Amino acid sequence: MQKEVTLIRMDRNTREVMQGEVAREYPLTVMFNGEQLATLLCSPDDMENLAVGFLFSEGLIHSKEEIKGIALDEQRGIVRVNTDAAGGVDRELFMKRVITTGCGRGISFYNFADLDQKLQKVESALKVTPAQILEMMKAFQIRSEIYQKTHGVHGAALCDASGILLFKEDIGRHNAIDKIFGHCLRGDIPLADRIIMTTGRISSEILFKVAKRNIPILVSRSTPTDLAVGLAGELGITLVGFVRGGHMNVYAEEGRIG
Image (cartoon, rainbow, N blue to C red; front, side):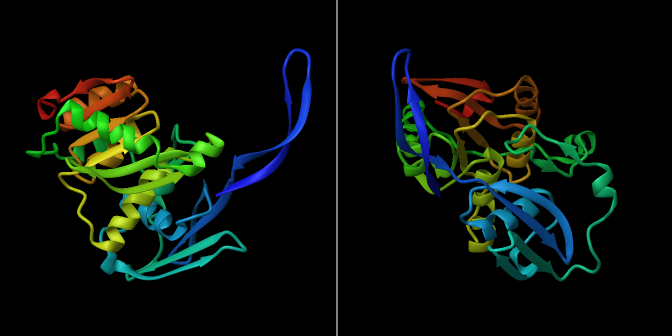
C-alpha cells in the first residue's frame, strides 16, 4: 500500500532527482444501515475489517451475528455495513462526538464522562515477563514491509504471552487497532486476556478502545499521555510504553509484568 513518487533529495551543496515511496492515503466513507456515518482516512487495504472494527469500537455493533451485509465499493470509496437493527444511527451520537487526536482527525462518538463511568475494571490473570515484551516488540518492528519502505504507517498487533497472533497496519494508529478488532469479530478470535501492541502514542481514546474489549495489557513503542496513564490505573490495564533499546516504561498495573 505504497506509491512511487518523484522527489528531489538535497543536502547543503547538491540536489538529486530520484524516485521514492510514500504510504497511500485513502478516504473511506462508512455507511451504516443506509446512513453516512463517518469518513476514515486510511490505508487502502483490509477496509471491510476496518469498517467493522470501527463500528465495534464505537459500540454500534456488538457481535458478528448482527451484521447482515458488507459491501465495499473501492472506486467510490464507500463501504456499506447493514445490520438487523431497526432504523439508523441515534442522532444523539452526533451531538456527543469529539474530534480525537487520531491520525486524520479520527472521529469518536462516545461521551467521555459517560464512558468512564460505564466501563468495568479489566480483570485478568495474564502475566508476561519483560523479556517476552522486548522480544515481541523486536519481532513487531520488522513485521511491516510498508513501514520499512515509507516510514509512513502505524502498526498494531494482537499478541499472547507466546508472541504475535495477528498484525495490521494503517496510516492511522486508531485504524490499525480497529482492523485488528474487525478481523477478530468476524473471525471469532477472542480478545480478552490478550495483549495489544502498537507503534503509536497511547492517548485516552486508545485506552478506552482497548478497555472496552477487556484487554489487560497495552504496549507501545511510543509514550502515553497523562490522561491515558490515569485511566489505565482506574481501569486495571497494564500500560507499557517506550519499549526500545532493551528497556521499557511501565506506567500502570505493573503486577502483570514479572
